[in-house]
Image 1 (cartoon, rainbow, N blue to C red):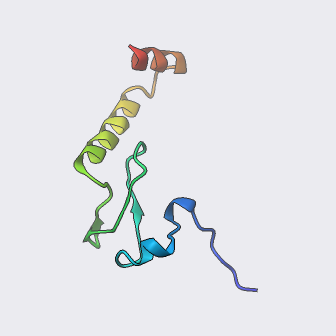
Image 2 (tube, rainbow, N blue to C red; image 1 turned 60 degrees about the vertical axis):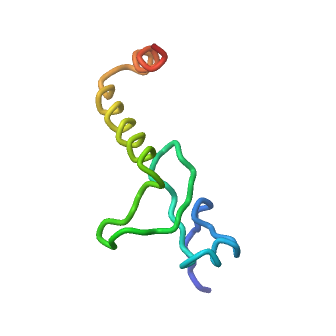
Length: 82
């Protein structure tokens, strides 16, 4: 019996996606974006975000998380909600 790897739903392509280029799409690296796009960039440094706004959003979320890592959950909610 052949062994198959599990397939993530976000990376599953239908036939229309395969005809739109090389057949592979990547998901945007921003945790709040659900866009998929054709891979581009150098092989050693591929494009990870669909646009500059998503890149900056991911950077901001990472830095905010680092700044609030020592706070309790209640304090984090209070900071976020203002």
